[in-house]
Image (cartoon, rainbow, N blue to C red; front, top):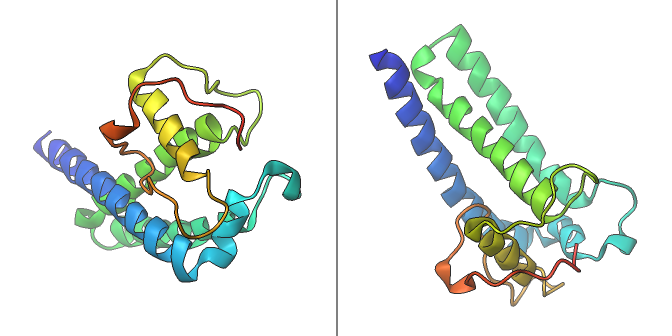
Length: 160
């Protein structure tokens, strides 16, 4: 039982660290030298072809690292198991919140209409992030942490 609690705590710490890493990568890579791929995520839907966009290539390194992490932890040293568990849980939350709830990339799943204060702030902050279609001038680079400065007003649902 103690081992399970320790792994759960370590996995949660990795989850939080993934949010910090995602903020850093989003601000300094995706809105920096990696804009060529991320630009597709800031374009209006009519400019996209199909459900995928170039920005989706950013997930590939995380998937590979997680697969290797599980392989190493299960095959060689289980003490490293919280790393792929925490990052996988972060990836699932990111996918649910960012891809399904905020951007509604899978139609007819979870509604983005909500009265929950956190979700309202999350959606609003991300829509504010998307008010620019250039790599400069954006704000709110985190995916799950939302600054209280974005308030509790109901967001606009017209973009992305």
